[in-house]
Image (cartoon, rainbow, N blue to C red; front, top):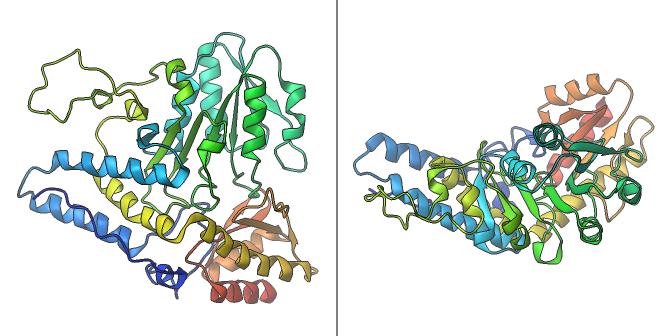
Length: 389
């Protein structure tokens, strides 16, 4: 029995999508920025794989490669790239490591980062800088926002890279990728983007952007199992990259795994070269099922859906004397993350959680992340709880 693809969910509208999440009706879930909830189609895909491995009637070890190739195609559609520009990994850090240890850096070179950045970028780039004799240059924030206007002041003849999150985890601030990418091209900098808090919620077309390497985990907004992700490599950086790590599956075996005593086979030419070894097959199947939500509904429609719900909360908070918004409301910088604060914020956060309203506490604010499975009844319950508190 070969590894079979799970049936793709039939998603006609947001009500149909919502019905596929078992938590609905029990939990008001506003926490995709932490970990997305599992849908029934994803669970079915994972359970199907486990069942096949329990029976082990036939060797299905090689069937995973067909799923891998389909996933490259589906994620390429999501961001407007080609499938050979997509690599598959276990998290966003894999793509960050390709950038940090693969792009050319010499002693004395500089990497620009924000001083209000998620640790995945900072620690990866810090380790690369220490190993390669480069250094991090922290760009000071402006009111907890990435200070793109100030970048010019921090560029020197030794600056080689800008590494930044598309959407910041603690307040949902979304940077202008087009403007940042143009800045990098103008100054001959590599542009590395951690897109984990934006992909699936904000439309993205890498053909219009000067991104060199983009990476994401899929366990948050992309609603896949934990421990999976993908990355994108622009054609222009392929020749610049050295191999920061190696796997025997970085080589093109032409699926001839019955004839392995060859040590001269070429590496893959595209992003597959940077995949790491054998894949977590059940995760690939879960990723495959989850991707249908975004390809069926469309990312623009998902964004519009979440923004409408968020706007309801914003209007309510504006009339409140207790809460205040700490997110950026500007059309060019908002996202599907809304943060608010108040007195005794930790106490109120715990009270929300006790009422089965799942959210996060981040940097002094209650972080609410809205997704395609949320609807007005969830917002009603949230506002009633905030009022009660």
